[in-house]
Image 1 (cartoon, rainbow, N blue to C red):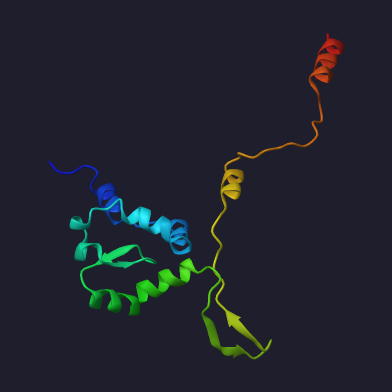
Image 2: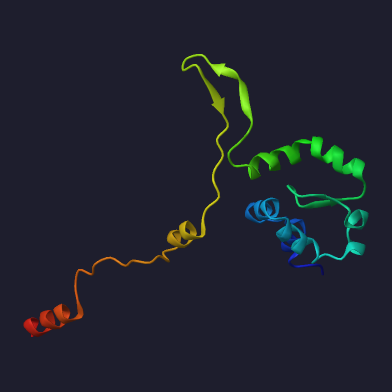
Length: 141
């Protein structure tokens, strides 16, 4: 009849690298080179020569890469990656006389992610010991 999981195939095909992976690429050229070596150059547009690190995309020519960098999707991704935004609004808020700054969310750390699902280390004092529970059971009987 047709492809039953067409939606998931399309989503997987369009998936790009996550923000934390791209930040690691920008901080460490070794990390970026390691990722690029996993892709065969023959399969990539422009034989893998024209790559936008922020968007994790390959382009056919240098002209398309330059025009991509001038576009809005690239600029949005650039702002998302640089969490402490360098984009300051030129207008001043006259009530407070302070420049407006675009605030972006910080990426979660591994510790915060584990705490969100309930995986955390609790090395605090225990309120009841095993012997206390045995005494409670003995007294109740």
